[in-house]
Image 1 (cartoon, one colour):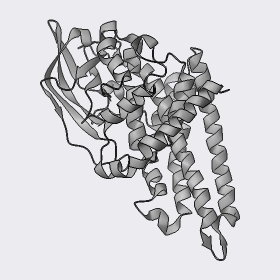
Image 2 (spheres, helix red, strand yellow):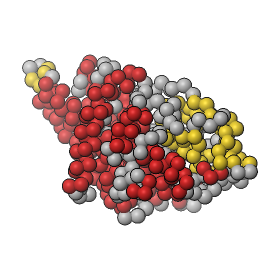
Image 3 (cartoon, rainbow, N blue to C red):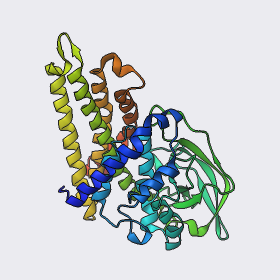
Image 4 (cartoon, rainbow, N blue to C red):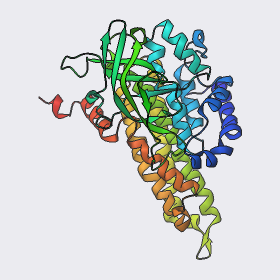
Length: 386
């Protein structure tokens, strides 16, 4: 992918914003288990960051997804993944389907304020018994007159204790067709019957306020339906494309940072009379890890180029998501080893990266699910051989 001067200007602008407005507060927000989403998102909106590839009509910049990819890479340089994940929810997880299939009324009331930083959104897909198995969700919305009555719950919802609304995937049909009986509905979280659960304690991403949501006879207008009834599963699968682009791009930046900080540490740390990095086992391994990063980045760029052209990139994004997830399990761990006892300390940049990036092989579709998709596209999955 060839980046233009405009791409580079955006990259530089995001990098400066991260260093000025976010990184100085990361330790404080990680300790608190939450960050001021409304305040931060408003600043990001004022800088033009929350609607990069959204239509100008709704306050976006109207650019292609390569610019959003650059944004994701630089957001990944935030010194923790909790905040970068929450930003991605706002830009690439709860708004793509709304932007692509929502009515003008929905876009005016929910998309435009999200791009302007005047409201915070979240995405409600996962349930305690349905994570990567999206078709198994139980939350349902029953039509009564001009309203949907919603019952059920969602789990592990990023920014849910602060969000103003949720893009909710729920069952709107009674037929036994899990891929055709679902819809996406915008639900204001101040609606009667909505309960926000307590913040969950997580292995990493501490500054992201993650909690369950409960829906007890929650009523919303039928006009809050995104697109067509029964198309929610398809819309969500398409929405996952941008979620995965954002997630794998920002996580790869954080994994890359593990290498960078480890190079600096092993240059300074001496053992047995010489810097650690002078050991062939270390500098060879770091060189190998850097190669893995660059190769994976190239795969993401190839997928993005084809995505912009309107091609089906499901296989490529699944490959890239799988590869980033695998690197998230190996590179931070290998780097931490070279820090010795320092790496085992909680308040350490390498241990935070180690904790944070463990999620990248789980969230947004587990690595095992990515392999299922890839094998089906290859024609070697058992279901393809019947």
